[in-house]
Length: 259
Length: 280
Image 1 (spheres, each protein chain N blue to C red):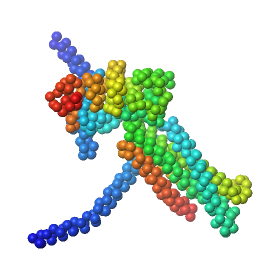
Image 2 (image 1 turned 45 degrees about the horizontal axis):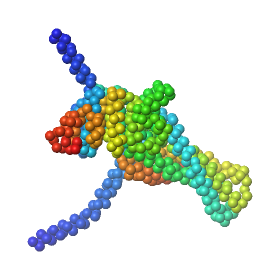
Image 3 (image 1 turned 180 degrees about the vertical axis):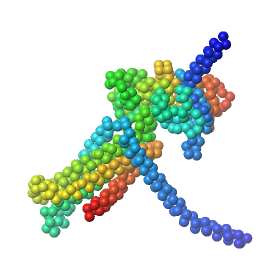
Image 4 (image 1 turned 60 degrees about the vertical axis):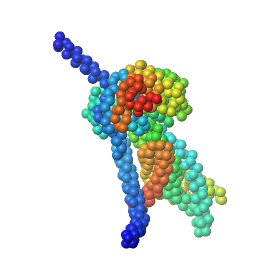
């Protein structure tokens, strides 16, 4: 009986460990003399939508850029899928980063390419064995997911801000990442388009079972998408909880994000 | 009390005297520091180019695309300017040669001028203005709109994809443009000769080919590879390392043209010195 219980406990522990996809321990990042992230400790579980709030310039975007490998951390531990990235070889780290998608604030579509070429770009780079027919099917599916099938032969400059964001999302999703990082997905959009993007984030979570970190200033976006919210202040995680918890927080500073 | 006041004014006077002397020293230190930092940074960028150029994947499609954009799309501009230069040079030189009764040497003089110096340098300057600034502005705006970061996230080496292809295209396409420019310039000269006379194309061009030697053509052609490489590299360097923001795009384009044009003259001067040393 005792052995059985202990085995079950071990299995439960393993399950819990495996369910953590991103973990940060005492993470620090500075630019010259300016310390942006002082001591970040956070955990993101599989299938979870984690929203990060904070004033501009508090290092929210820096945080997710460290996860995807666009920036290097100065100090602390960053674990992706349970593996400490500092112990990994470059090739192993690249393999891990392949499982991460990043939606840039501006959409970051390649201006010199058509919508089709934009979507084909990551496929050609990462899936070397893909046939033309498979590529066309994936492009079509991705565009249908974001409701922009008719734009396939258009140039990014012909699209509106909301369409560019949705296409950026389609380009990221085409590789079916396990973790999605959204850098201010609703910034610069009208409330209706902003809501559409938030709904799209939820659809992505359901359809592809992705875990997401969403950086946002948009209260509505946070309310719609968040399973959990972390508030960053002065380079540390100042508050954590559900939308309702933080909306009714005793700290007026935290509450101010939800007013 | 008077002594204290006097000392105070003397100290103030000394401060005033020392400040203007110190400022240029500080400024010059900053300028020199910035200059050496820029040189260091460009050197690192150049070494990185030579390192990455041999690293697969080789972006052949992008190389061809850039060669088309950089080379083929520059043909009309190069053609018009070369034709005018050839024509004007002939028209302007004619009266002087007529004074010495050396009018028959006109095709030879124009051909040597165009092929040795004017063709390569003028084409390189046009190239720096059109292509150098274009590359600088394009990469800088890609930097601002996070497209370079997006490439990295897509596991594409942006340096290999953007910089190596553009620098190689510029290095290959400029010599070809110079050959084209020389031909059009000589045609312009032929047209100018015929404005005041009647010389057949066969006579005109055979005189040119008889007067040209290997030492006229070869060094002039070789230096165009260096021109192309430098223009491409500086355009990429300025764009790739631009400051974020729209101001950075303008600065990158502008400084790419200025720096590349200056480098064209410096390389030309070195090339001429080396050529004359080898010929002696």
